[in-house]
Amino acid sequence: MFAACQGLWSVEFSADASREIDELVGRYPERLGALIPVLFVAQREFGYLTREVFEVVAERLDVPTAQVLNTASFYTLLYKKPVGRHHVQICRNVSCFLRGADALTACLGSRLGLSNGDVSQDKQFSLELVECLAACGGAPVVRINETYHENVTLTAFESLLDGLAAGSEQGVSG
Image 1 (tube, rainbow, N blue to C red):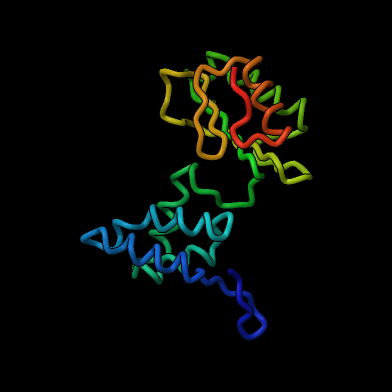
Image 2 (image 1 turned 45 degrees about the vertical axis):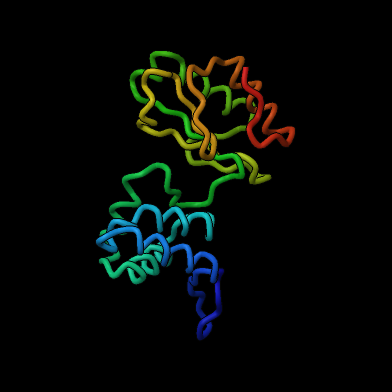
């Protein structure tokens, strides 16, 4: 939640998120071990990670802000800017590219007018092209929010997008 502080906006965790962070930190012998799980709590709490969020996480874990930023910038699972309700990540690494990822990207572009980094005007979809989703054996791979879809054909992708646009949280695969 955002709270006004002397005319500026500051970032504060809700009581529930704060309790969850305390519980996560307690699981690790070193506070730094909880960094990635705490970043996921922060992302769920605020929608995406800003400089202010990095600073609050660093303070909670008693680590340098630069270390939090460096860790967060490495992972495509952590969003550094607003994303749509259905955040579509398409792997563009060699395995996925050779098996049709470029056609999936073109499909999303033609259907929704999205390019890499865009969020649809209705905030329902966003597109991020990523270097690797670590599922090369199932290329091409698409990740939507936290769900992986492997061996995605153009037909299956269109069906999945149709399902999401119609309100299904998982879309329709086929």
